[in-house]
Structure formats: C-alpha cells, structure tokens
Length: 299
Ligand SMILES: Nc1ncnc2c1ncn2[C@@H]1O[C@H](COP(=O)(O)OP(=O)(O)OP(=O)(O)O)[C@@H](O)[C@H]1O
Ligand SMILES: O=P(O)(O)OC[C@H]1O[C@H](OP(=O)(O)OP(=O)(O)O)[C@H](O)[C@@H]1O
Ligand SMILES: [Mg+2]
Image (cartoon, rainbow, N blue to C red; front, side, top):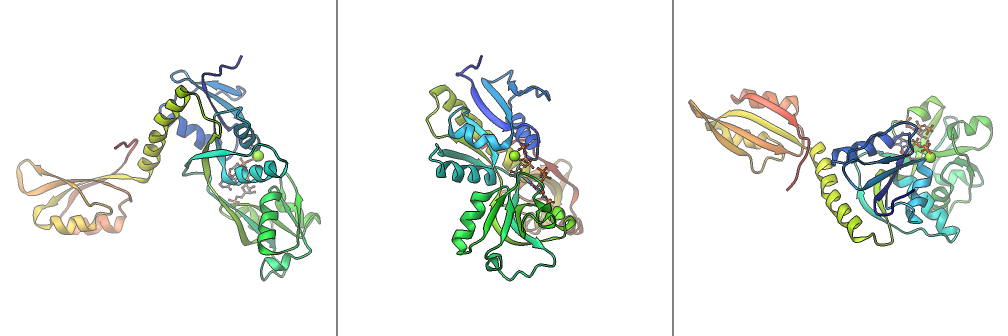
C-alpha cells in the first residue's frame, strides 16, 4: 500500500544520474537502503519514499502528480514537456534546484566526410535522434526543413546504417562521436540534472520537509565547490599572503603560541589552491600549508 503522507521522490533506477542523485539524498541526511531489485526504497529516518524508475518516466510522474519530487536531466524534462504539451497533457512542474552533475549537451553531429557549413546544410535531410521535439523546435527556430527520425538508442550508428544523414544526440566528452566517425556541429540544448517538484501544492507537512531539505542541498553543492585552507605565515608578509589566497576576503588570523612573528591563517575558499600558489606561499615563508575538502556548509 502506498502511504500518501510520505514524500515521494523519483530517481533514475540505473544509469548516468542514479549514483549522483542517491548521493545527494544521502548527503542531506536521508537514510536509504538501496537494493538492486527493490523499486521502492523507504527511508528509515524521514517520511520519504524513493521510486526507482527509468528516467523517461520521471517528468510524466511529476507532471501527473504521482510523485512529489524528481531528479531528472533537463534534456529529458524539456523533451517530455514539449511532447505532453503537444498531446494536451499536463506539463507543468516547478524547478527547485539546478544540480552539479549530469552535465551534457544535445548536439547535431554529421559523418566526417559530409559537407556541413551550417544547420542549413541539413535542409531536406533526415536526422536520427531520441529527442524529436527538441530537435524539431531547433529546426523551426533556424528555419530549416529537415526530418527528425526517432531512435530510442544507438543513435550514433544511424548514418552508417543508412537510417539518417546525421544525428542529434547527447555528448559530454565526444568519445562516442569520435568512435563512430562523427563530428559535433551545432549545440541544440545544454543540460544538467535538476530537482523538480509537482505543480500542485504539497501538503503542509510535505512542504515543510522540502523547505528544510533545500538549504541542505545548497550546502552540499557549496561544500563540494569549496576548500578549507590552513597555513602558518610570517606576520610581516600577511598582506602578501592574503592576496595570494583565492576568495579569501575575511581570513581568520590566529596567534601561534611560542612564535611572536608568525600567525595561523584559516580561510574557506571557493577555489582550490594550485601548486604554483602553494610554492609562492612557501617562498614567502609560509609553512604547514593544508588544503582540505569540506563535507557540509551552512550559514
Ligand atoms: N555522456 C553523458 N555525460 C553526462 N551526462 C549524461 C551523458 N549522457 C547522458 N547524460 C544525462 O544522464 C541522463 C540519463 O542518461 P542514461 O544514458 O543513463 O539514460 P537512459 O539510457 O535513457 O536510461 P534509462 O534506462 O533510465 O532510460 C541523460 O538524459 C542526460 O541528462
Ligand atoms: O560524449 P561521450 O562522453 O562519449 O558521451 C555520449 C554518450 O553517452 C550517452 O550514452 P550512455 O553512455 O549513457 O549509454 P546509453 O546510450 O546506453 O544510455 C549518450 O547517449 C552518448 O551515447
Ligand atoms: Mg531513458
């Protein structure tokens, strides 16, 4: 039986977004036991149930209000939104956070030997893709008459198989395109993972839980981007030392017992410290230079 009082969150069961989405939930203090065959996971310390599904289904589950929240790639979300809009189905949702993983782009790629000057070179041609709505919107914006041919996977093989002249698929490193003799030409859509919520208001209890979890997500993302830097510095060079530390407007400067001429400097930095900067700090007489990861941040 499903318990409607528990917050329902949809995540991809297995694929590119699964591990990172589960990692976010665990990092914000939600205890979960994920077992491979179990498609619903109940948190043991929060009123939260996790639905593990194919990513294709997540936008629809949120838009139909079957789940409260979902972790999904913007590419899949926007495609399904356009598809549902065209079919007069519910397509509203709220974006709560843009996350720091799942970065990729939906791009047009053509065989190495094909002449391509601009997207106009695709006039009258067939382009294989898993994202026909995004691709057709792009063609319409560009004023190009080309045909999107829907394939659910292995899109890169379409030109050699004679199914299409070019492709439009997700790219991150470009290794898959290169391995298949294709060149990336135009970016149709840039994507990251997002956390979305259903459009209809949540119960007061569920909304209170979501409002408590969001600052924790911010804290986890901010922490990943930040470093804690500690070092001992000669007092005489404190200003030079500060100017070398990235994002260190307000460092904590502490006395070092037994050393009147040296201080300890602590700073939370939004950037890491490069080896070159560490060498410069050492040359100024700094010692015990430590760069440490931060697990959580708040306030
Ligand atoms: N190469 C990539 N680098 C980074 N992110 C990617 C990459 N490829 C895909 N993604 C992101 O991850 C999402 C899921 O990709 P994946 O390949 O796991 O999906 P899938 O094969 O459709 O899985 P499912 O079985 O759940 O339908 C994509 O929609 C996109 O947002
Ligand atoms: O530019 P690259 O770094 O090579 O990544 C691009 C590939 O990654 C995705 O597929 P994935 O590996 O997730 O497999 P799938 O197609 O089976 O989902 C995407 O569909 C591309 O094929
Ligand atoms: Mg999918």
